[in-house]
Amino acid sequence: MTMTSRERVRVALSGGRPDRVPCALGFFTQELFGSPDADELFQTDVRFVEFAPPPGQTGFVSYLESLPQDTYVGNSGQLRSYHEWGYHPETGAEHALAGVRSAGELVEGILPDLTDRTRSAGVAARVRELQRRGLAVAAPPPHLGGELFEAAYRLRGFARFMEDLLERPALVDFLLDQLTAMLLQNATILAEAGVDVLLLDDDVSACGGMLMSPATWRRFFKPRLARVIRTAREAAPDIKIFYHSDGDFSRIVPDLLDAGVDVLNPLQPDCMDARKIRAASGERPAFWGTVGSALTWDLGSPGQIRDEVAERLITLGPAGLLLAPAYDIDFSPRENVAAFVETVRSFG
Image (cartoon, rainbow, N blue to C red; front, side):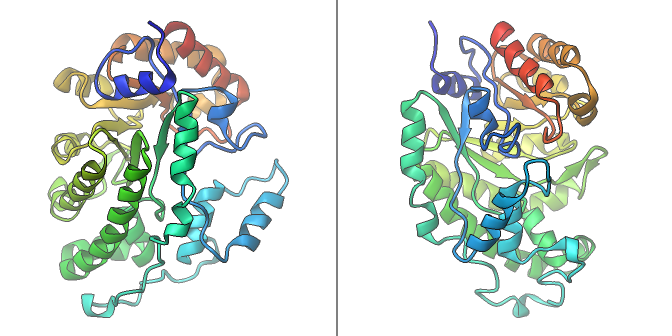
């Protein structure tokens, strides 16, 4: 029986076997080939929604929209977030919270207000519209490149925040608690809006492994992540929880499952052994991603992309799998993206 895209995605992310393996391009690749939505352009199985830009950014957004199509300054949604938080690394400006020395100096209200409900007012209607078309809908809470770890180190500075984790745990706890409070409210908004997949994001690893010890991650991040997931599920018991980190985060995969994560992303094949995780855990968690290195996407051929898709289908599919690029594809040839989508449709 042929499934709708939404049915296909929900079955796959529940660890089941759909009529074919679903695919998506991604929430960081929505401005490709002259289209504001690459997933719409290539008719994949997933659409992404997000909160409206904050008030006061009309001029900044107009500036981004006015740039020529061949001018690349980065993903506009990410740039809007940076602008909102006052994070402008291109200027060499000091990090917003660099001068804070203790938790007592981190007063309430020092962070931007991400909980303004006017920004999410249209989300539920957009979700319903897409689902009526038979599409699965995924959405990220607004954040600074990552909900907890990335937001904290962009506010403090990377080296300084890594020192904080070892030397100033009270400051870390207070900062992360403020970030978590905003995240709880926004995750609830998205769950109540009916999104199929809640996208949670924090780059806690690199190709060589974790950026901190698993013990440190468990101390500061796992309990907060688990609380967010529980809260989202209280609002929408059937919501699927997606967790993204670049690099190799294999050492915390059991912890992510324990916290309630359903879906791992992107499982970059040059960093992380998805087959080993699949052999150890079966079809739960589901995998979202797995296809291609940055070099393959940008400089490889359509034939190489087709071969990678076929290999993933054989070694990881067909249950518990949604195929997507494992890297951003902002500079990938259209032919490679088309080959990816066509191969999944034909052989998935």
